[in-house]
Length: 230
Image: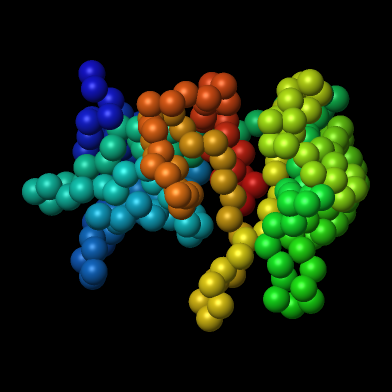
């Protein structure tokens, strides 16, 4: 099976998971299909990588296609993005919850600058992490920060820090910059891109979907954590 070229009908996915058939809403710009599950409602749109789960926007790897009135979804989206939404989510048990909180940037790596008061992203991420630490500790987490002052730490060293600590979670904090005049607000939550899928980040180079990273061993859990956190 060539997974990269595999598509299935949304009807089939629903049938396999013992769900009611998808409901096709009245077509406007693009047809929308709703799938009701015991854990929430998934909304998919023909020709769009943007979907909604319980009203929250999620990004797919591939835009669904409509053929003969039936919606086709990529098999990797079905496995990596839809399936985890149906499964029970459980945090690590009490007493073994270790999280590494990573305040983005630092030192000579300033990050973006606030238009409000001209302070840098590195200051806000550190402030955020220091405020977050006692809140997590009060919930039974062991919290480690990659930095507690204004120093620059290479990305690889941040990962090694988490690995050495045997962390259950790695949470990196950042603030976005937007072009002036655009109405952008709210939060974004990212996780490691599942194996075989293109990233939703805009970068100066093309993704190689064939690459596999160690954290891809936890694709399902990563996605569950990102959705739950958001």
